[in-house]
Amino acid sequence: MNIRTIGWAALFIVIVCIVAALPALAQSNSPCAGMSATVYVNWPQFGSDPCHTAYNPNEFILGPYNVGSLVVDWKYETGYNIFTSSPAVADGIVYVESFDGNVYALSADSGILVWKYAIGPDPRYSPAMANGVVYARGTDGNLYALNAKTGMLLWAYKTGGYWVGDPTVANGVVYAGSPDHNLYALNATTGALLWKYATGDVVASTPAVANGIVYFGSNDGYGYALNATTGELLWKSVGSGSPVVANGVVYASCSDGGLCARNANTGAVRWNFKIGYGFTLPAVAYDVVFVGCSDGNWYALYADTGGVRWKYTPQGFIGSSATVANGVVYFGTHSEGALYALYASTGDLLWKYTTWLYIDSTPAVVNGVVYVGSGDHNLYAFHLPGH
Image (cartoon, rainbow, N blue to C red; front, top):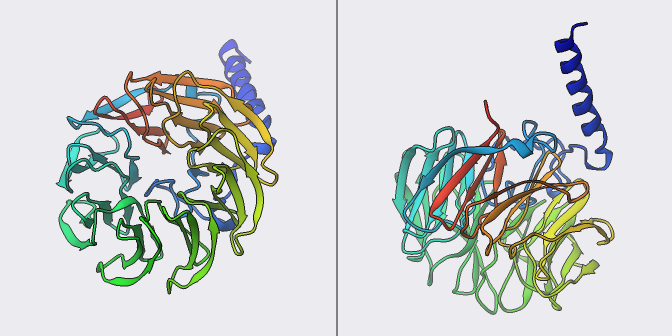
């Protein structure tokens, strides 16, 4: 065995040992509603799946052993902020909204513009893509359905006010909230109204869908669980905000500002984690809940008890929610304008990139690339050298 062979063998052993050291964080199927063998080869909407777990179980290129080598692959400047819109990635195209009033479609490989479509001034939410259609919330009161390849308008549905929150697509239905106090369920193909449910105030949250139930929060101070097909109320709880659903548990705000874990079928509280007041949407993977809190820390909580596994304090004020893929947690900071990558098992810092302007965009991690928007007007794509 020559020196080169010994070197490669040693490198292989090191990589195997690193992976073997992650028994509690091994790859698993999507925790979205406990569904088995669910594969998301893309990142088609906020949080990747309709449950918004923000977990990609099929990322095998980037990991704790090489994420520190990430470099900028390309960046695309829209001319205005895109720091709050989280990119969707599907079929080789990245979709993102910019404060210049457009939704953009860019080549995932090169960042070259495919098309753009005007959806009203200052759009700041995240588009969703399903079955060749892109859904984008316009500030002009319309929910737009666009051909994913060409940007051609397919249909638009207008409510009594501008849409708020990100649209969620599941099982041929688009769910979205509105300032007119309603949650809407629209036929994803035609835009026809299937049903709407009235609450006591603005529905500003992004709904989550799992096992035939749609969950969302309203500014009236309640979280709702409705039959996803009929809109019938199943239960409601005190506490608003956007929910995340994983393995039969709903994670959303409590009335006291904490993060509550509730039984997805009954709404009964399993645990309540409160540090400061307010938190990011959690990401759920490996039976761990990753969440940023208003006390300036990122926490990894055991999903069954809410106990703290680790915490990490970034240099800047927390901006985005987290994304998890292959043992790595990614998130952005607002005041610092940095993108972080932490070791999911311990919270140790693996990599950091600073754009100098706020990153409130939740990263999308797919096919060995990290996509994220920044306040410096750019959408960034990071990859490993040579990939």
